[in-house]
Length: 97
Image 1 (tube, rainbow, N blue to C red):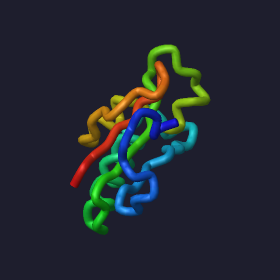
Image 2 (image 1 turned 135 degrees about the horizontal axis):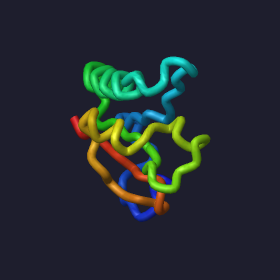
Image 3 (image 1 turned 90 degrees about the vertical axis):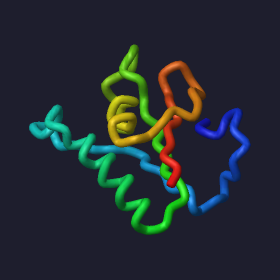
Image 4 (image 1 turned 60 degrees about the horizontal axis):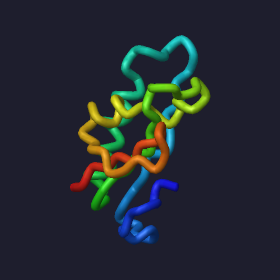
């Protein structure tokens, strides 16, 4: 679904992906996901990725179980920009290096 309406090569292994953030109960709402997203950007950049993508959810009407992939705000704060919206709640975000 993240590739719907996009012309990029799906097999390009220089484009990395962040698939989810799991934060243990008791440590949530402390900025852990934001720190992980920033670290993922640094890690990918330092290791030669051409781009890094994430597939977060918007918080509007999202189910709690869906938010393990991260929220749009977490990715935006780490420098990702929106590429597309394959569904009303799913956002494809990307950082190009």
